[in-house]
Length: 393
Ligand code: SDX
Image 1 (cartoon, rainbow, N blue to C red):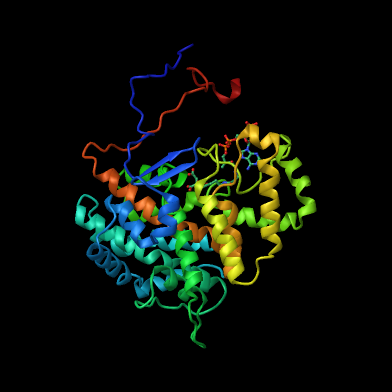
Image 2 (tube, helix red, strand yellow):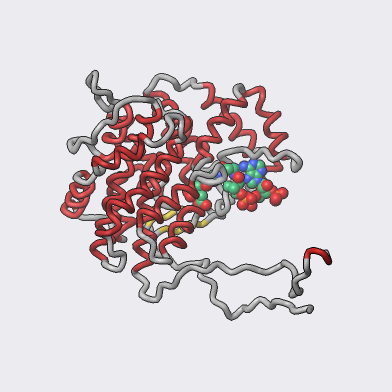
């Protein structure tokens, strides 16, 4: 009776981790990948080069980059038998459900040939995942709209290949617009990694048990799906559509401030950034560029987004709460303008973030002292008590 559980401060929690991959300064709005600022990488580099940087720690030489891009390009097809997994889903299944299922199923195809304790095999698994995620995402999209799967092409770069697999049909020729491909590549880069966010922590915790990388990445996809995390890009566009016109913004601002209203401004706020998310700044520039290219620069959603941002950034409540647009605020507007349905926004986030998940997965194995993760709890439940028979309760 009266036994009190004491919190053992000596127990070293494994909920936190060391990393050399990404640095965020939330107060200053700084995001560095291996020391390089995200705005320079987004404007001067390209996604597969950033993948190399995240995985290996340095920008590649021309020869290293060519070898890496050739390896990724030549692994973009998935096993033909995996096509059957898509057909087991209802046509209206959310593509994130399909991605969780199919990526998890990769365990059945590659797990036996992946010894996670072997560095070379870890690298092969990492290449397979980076290479195949766009194919799986595109197939999930094609399946959801009843169109035939489109195979990857080795003559296209990573982003152009994804657009090709999503938007081409066997019945007619499809030429990928290089400017759209550049915008797509920049969106991939802006979502590549982000330190210990919820889905990356999920991948690290799952892989700390020695589970195979495909199952761990499937766990990361599942976590990213939530509207508080990667699902915010879809939720944000749906919110902008619900607002509809600039004159309805005050109504939603009031709801966001109302503690009795669960409504939150999707695409605003962040667990770490208490300043502008530097990715949102680049994304906003891309939105202007892509919409102008497509001749929809007067897109009403973009007008609503810009006015909402302006009002929120000057509203004392949001200033006091340090709420700024995050990476999800503008991405949906670009993706919708490019022709994607809102259901494909988070799958695109997931395929972009795969390199971050897998780079941190690899990093974890580099620690010979790696232990299984065991986040700590502070027990607030009942103290010790004896069982009581039902007739005495
Ligand atoms: C991503 O972690 C990462 O790195 C994630 C990510 C990545 O790249 O992996 O950056 C991607 O997930 C970006 C976040 C996408 N989510 C959204 O846009 C959904 C809307 N945002 C919120 O749900 C919220 O801002 C979170 C979940 C992102 C953060 O939640 P917190 O930690 O509760 O936010 P906070 O501590 O900064 O909140 C401070 C206050 C709170 O009010 P009080 O309790 O102090 O009274 O601000 C309020 C919150 O209620 N608040 C909001 C708000 N976000 C926070 N109020 C209205 N609208 C919002 N969007």
